Every structure is written in structure tokens, then in C-alpha cells.
Length: 524
Image (tube, rainbow, N blue to C red; front, side, top):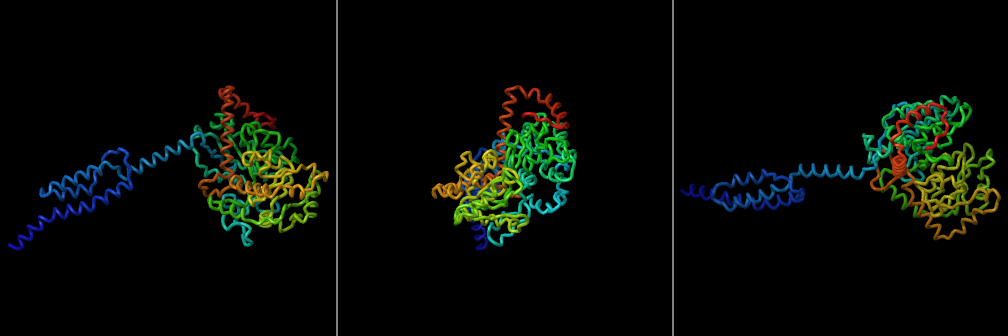
């Protein structure tokens, strides 16, 4: 009897124990579900855990407990499942992404390999004196630099060739956040033709037809594509990592420099990017020379900027470079003379074959300790050195408007005196201006403000590591793509107003035919 009484008592205790367990378990389940779910009116989903408790408790001995559990089950059933929340979140993110990219999509042409990859196969033969293949690794950045003397940071610095932008830009634009495989949605169309590398492989010892062959082939390929017909190529953009002067050959003489890529009518319909544009054309635009700095993270940029702000700039001005004895128009020998005669100037004179001038840290260390850096024209108006100097926080001193002001309008401020000093070449030649006196007249607080402006420009002037993506900052590629899209929008509006869109296919046949001629200039 005693054992039977104990069993009977145990049976009465079981529902109560289950009820207590449910009471302790339910709040935690509610907290868990509320933490990982949202109320969005999703269809009720029954909880298998509470259903099981209700079934076990269904002994008729505690109806109140059963009703309580059923009510809890119904309330929890109104919460969406984790799967529903995930699906909703992904769909919302996709919709938000579409909205953010509307009007910003870029379509990249899938060109045949002969227009890019096959050109790179000859990298060891482009120059007789250097193997360029070592500069094509790491997405075109080259090999990491030796930071033994501490002139750079430990991460993000590479021995980048100053004419190596073809691969860098192509690699980097593949990380653009609004790419599309549907050209009808594209605000702009990128043509990944390695125009700079193509021309350099034929600069010496090739006849005119060989120099122009790839350019003519590209135009023929493009103008027969359906993507071209939308705007007659006016929504297309292409880049050469060299200057426009390498693509401006005027005749079919074998001895004349470069090819005639920029002079082809179809190319003049596109937006063409160079590290230096021509002064008289409106369809080509300049983008910064690649420097040695290619950060993979925003933090690398912030840390470098803070380091440049803390630098002690003991020299008032610096000139780093060589003279041009064969160029009667060059002012470089005047700069060497003035800098060498001033106790406020640090002169790094580069003569032919001088080893120190082949080491990137030679210049970067000097720029970091100088307030103003002289940037005269060299073989052309622009210099890669100007961008190296600005990354080091050194305020550039220009002597010709085409060295920066008429070139990099998308990347440098319109207020030229906010980040640079201008001294006319004519004043240097005539000896009417002392560079030292001109720079010493600038108040220290103004000079400091100019330095800060230059340091803040850093993200706009560099090309981020193409194997990664910056989190919040925009680099030179981001700004370039934005500017190209804005230009295409204006062209599209002009075409719409003039009714040009209706006759795009008519012009297409003319453009295709002209593309294979010597290429007289056609306005865009």
C-alpha cells in the first residue's frame, strides 16, 4: 500500500513538475525569439517545443496550465521563423542595392584576349633595357617595396610602374560596387583594352601599320557590337596608362612617334582616360599617375595621413629630378641652380644612371621632410613625382597650368591656391623671380593649411589595392567612374534633345567605315 501510495503521489506531481519546467523555460524561449526575430505580420509558425509540452501536460489534471501553454504557443506562433527573417532581409538588401545602384551601373565588355591578356604575354620584350613583367604582379601593382629605412608603411606599398595603370584600373574596376551583366541597365560601358601597353610594345622598330593594328581591330570589334548602337559609343570609356601624346600620331610615317588611337573617329566618340591629356581636345581626360601606395583598408589611409601630419618639415622646398640639356624650353637647370644656391632647399639631382634615383624611398623620405616640392614639366607637362609628393604631404609648386590645373579636374580642387603654388615658367627663365623668396612670403599658418589640404587629398589620388575594397573612402577609380557617368548623362540628354538617338544607327555605319581609314578628326 505504501508503494502504491507513492506511485499515486508521483503521478500527481508529474504535471506540476512539467508546469514548473514550462514556466521556467518559456521566458527564455520568448527572449531568444524576440532577439532573433522581428514582428512583420508573417504567417503563424507553430513551435514544436511548446506543442510537445502541451501534449505531455494533457492529462486533464491541470487545465489552467494547459491553457497557459497553448496561449504561449499561439503568441510565439505569430513570430516569423529565422528562415523567414533571413529571406526577408536578403530580399530587402537586394532591393536596397538596386536602388543605390540605379543610374550608376557599369557594364564591362568581355573583350577577346588579344586586346588585353595576350598583350601582357610580351611584357619581357616591351623594352630592351628592362623586363616589365615584374611590374605586373599583384593586380598590376608590382612587388612590395623594401621598407628597411622606414620611408613607407609596412602594408600597402609597392614598386609600381608610373605607366602601369592599364592593368591596375582594369583590376580595380572589377571591384566597383555597381557592376551589371545587362548592358541595357548600364550608365556607362568600360572597354578593358590595354591601350598603353599596346602602344609601348611597338614604339621602337615597328612600322605605322603595326602600331595601329590593335586600335583599328578594337574599333571594328566595338562598332559591330549591340552595346555600341545605344549611343554610338558615347557611353563607352577606355583607358591608356600612358600620356595622350603616345596616341596622337599625325601621319602614316614609320618614324613618327606613337599610334593614332586617339585620332580615330570612333574613339573620339568615347571618353578616353590618360595620365596626361592633350590641351585642345574635349573627349579625353586625365587621371592621376599611380603612386607606390595602394591601401587595402581605410585604416591604412588614416594611419598614413596621421603620420604625414606629424612629420617635421625642416626644408622649405625641394627639387628632385634631372635636367634636360637637349631641351631649350626646359627650366629645370634654372631650378637646379636656384635650389643648389639656397640653404632652405634640399636638392636631389638625378643624373643618368644614378642609382639613388631608382630607389622609391629616396624621394619619399625627402618629400616627407619638405614643405614645398618643385614640379616642373619633364618630357611632357605632367610628372608622377607630383603625386608621390602630395601623398607625402608636400605642397606642389607648378610652373605650367598643364602640369595639373587643366589636367586633373576630377581629382584636384578648383581652388588651385588651396593646395599648390604657381610660378610662371617665363618668370623663371627671365630670372625675375626668386623661388625661395616667393615661398618664404607665404605665412606659416597658410602653409600649414595648404599642407593639411594636400594630406586630405590622399584618397582621391591613389589607387586602392584591386584585390580588396575600401570600406568608406573613395579612391581615384571611384571618382573617375562617377565623373564618367555624369558626362555620359549629359551626352545622353544632349542626344535626346537633338534627336540624335533616332539616328544613332545611321551614324554607326559611317563611324565603322571611318574607323578603318587614316582617321581625320571628328568632333564628339
